[in-house]
Length: 218
Ligand code: DX5
Ligand code: ZN
Image (cartoon, rainbow, N blue to C red; front, side):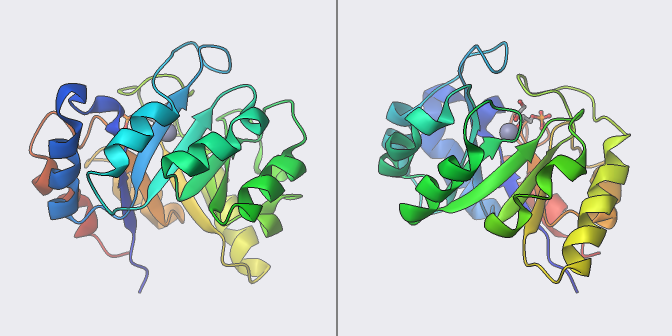
């Protein structure tokens, strides 16, 4: 039996009350807190960075995943580790020495994730899959919460699942973007271990929304 993990993305949370939102996540049984860091270059939006992460680190002991949608992750790994990230996720599409970035993060003792944009084929992750803890498959174009799930990504999730299982690897598969209570079962059935959701969790009953995701066992 596969037990899925739920990673609420605070992008749709009430930023004037983040500690309370994180407390609700805890009560709902959230496994990971997903932190969408955007720099206005890699994606057309700007969110928050290490300063905010450091201050909300005090509010919860749930592991933090810093999803870095930034052009130069190589320059900021240390800052995100110091701020309290437990997982650092970088994009396959950035034009930096990815091998070095992943190694640097790992040397700081955090787990590492590799994110793939909707148009980036799974093939592009194969060279890295043995040196990561999790693969984050984007099911929207990164930049904003509340977008529609891109259906064609389902085949990429299946391909990744088959490859990872076939190679006997323990890399987890996360899926991020457009996941709702109405469509998450097919994401999980395709092979996701971790589902990331912002708008389907925040803005309503956070505890119930998380629990409803967690009730499903594939
Ligand atoms: C998109 C972010 C996602 C986003 C998900 O750039 O990486 O994590 O917050 O939001 P929803 O779940 O509303 O699609
Ligand atoms: Zn994200």
